[in-house]
Length: 551
Image: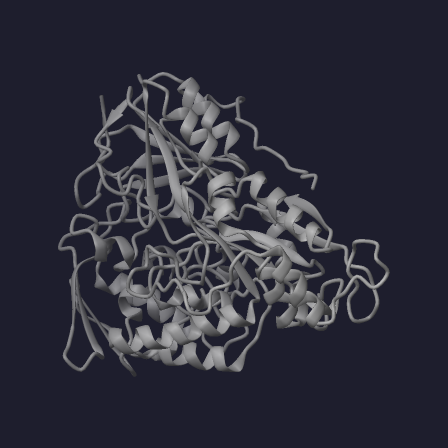
């Protein structure tokens, strides 16, 4: 996921014009027969390379081929381990021991050992501070500053010793790649030119055998998968820009499984006799972001830099209406950075929470100096310029699509308080370019409605940090809290620090949380079985595609 699943600090960061991905009908990939035993799935994803050191956009499909050392699913479910079978931490909170699966092999038949994992981490460590530091993709140097040493005690035992107590050894999202493939790749190439062309070599159940950017990835079963060769003949993952073609292909039988569905599509598919629908709470957050930049890349008005202006806008957003009317009730109303599914850290902020009140929003805008001086129904900023804000939106790779109705509601509410908004919908690539750091050509917009999907640990505060901050907001106190959280293992203390950080960013309002959507998916019943009953599909691993069987 662009998601998404990032390392803890790396995370720390009304006419609609849109486009829909084609159904790639020139390929036999969307054939509707069960006879070939090939699983076909689709989602709103935009992978750009098979090189995990050079991208944030290719969680799908890389997660099927490369294992994490541990990661989220391995901690939640006993039957979904990663590269490590077991792990433990010493009483000092510094020394972590990982037992690698005995006799595990890479998909090319070579041994996969603790030494491969050591290579991955030390390969990254060796790049720190160099001009070509590996800090731009899923496999990145973030968190390695806390590491004292990483060694292989033998082929099946990995030891990580940290400088301070930290959960980074089990919460990092580094894809374990084979040393014998990557050992001669320079840092410069790993950052850019090395495409890691298929067929890939991994320890996951499905190996990427073909990749067509913007269209699909084709997979073959891993003959050496530790749990045994998967029972299907392979898999094809289709990439889409919107959910409409996913729903259509599920109905026609062109897809066996589809994710990123909208509430309307999900409700419609639930009536189909050959389709089973599912839902689950996830970590995704839909948000309204303000461009808080003051220099290069700034928005059209300095008001965006004013927390009083942003706070007032917060009173003009009705999260419950977004959930009820745009999401058909299949979401939780947005509050702070922590979604309800992260029960260890969630707070409804009841003592400081804003309430929807357009009159109150107007009063606060007046008090902050943003009035309609000429009575034309449009407010002016402190420089005397009438507001006309540009809101950009779109769906980042692997995120759930935000309904158009939600954007129409937001534009309507802001118009009612005297702030007209134009809405521009972009595809994932264009949205990524517009929201990039200003030194990389991003910025120049006013408002952003989008989503991100963090890990279920304090790294979910990253939207306010310096690494990937979509509002460009900076706050030294917030950064200090993040630094303290990074080196805190005690849950009670961690909760206190997270709560302070959540309250700080809520009151400063660089973001207004809109909703926490449910993951809505659907699968056909006619071709495959073995989907399981919980977390279909897991958003943190390849489950259940390692255990599907033809009907």
